[in-house]
View 1 (tube, rainbow, N blue to C red):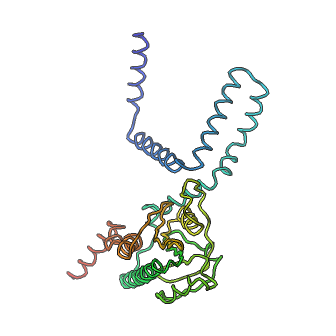
View 2 (tube, rainbow, N blue to C red):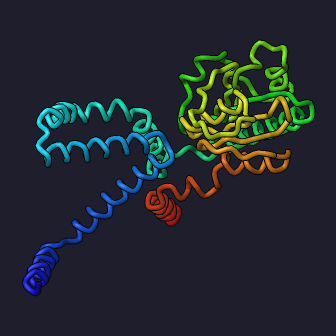
View 3 (cartoon, rainbow, N blue to C red):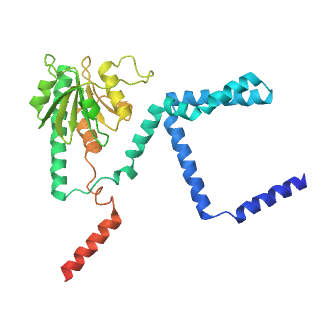
Length: 298
């Protein structure tokens, strides 16, 4: 027993002797990737698929142990194409993971730095659109008029927009009200907001694949959840039956909004903090500020 302990101790010491800082970094990165994959797959269909693959691996190991030649040959042939099979079976989850990475803070560094006057104009346009949507949602809540409004963010919704009618107009309470008037030709679809403008209407959204949502939610709410699961869009829904205002984001619904709470929620999601762009590349900003000061001294 002491020999086994001594051998284990010597092995640990030998590993520590050649252990470098880059090895620690390597372990941290791999652990983070594994954790992220587990987090993405958790509570999705991918979790069940992973369980199925684990069961097949266990069966494959048992067939080798008990020398079940025919079964082992079948599993061997199957796992030869396992990489291709995984790419096909997990295609939705892989796409979702890549989109999630693109929407992360790292992905935001690809965005350019807009001039201050362009940024101010953009924020003004977004605030105007938010105010119009809030007013319309408040009116629809009273009249129990159904509405489905999608605010596009980093994930572009070109495929969704192609299913509707391009409008590309300045937002107004009257125009949005006319779009969702129950006899208007575009009222059944979704309205897409891009850069603070009403870009398209009558668009068809993908329905959520989540079967655990309440049976009280109709097609409009399921479509809102579907597009929020497939993108980073923020979706405002007004129920035609109850007049309840809801917001969908990242596949999660929050409900029972009022005019004030809806305005606060949309501004928090759609209007970036004033310091976001100035803090995006702090080293670059410091260098530029230093050069400006040097020119002023000269």
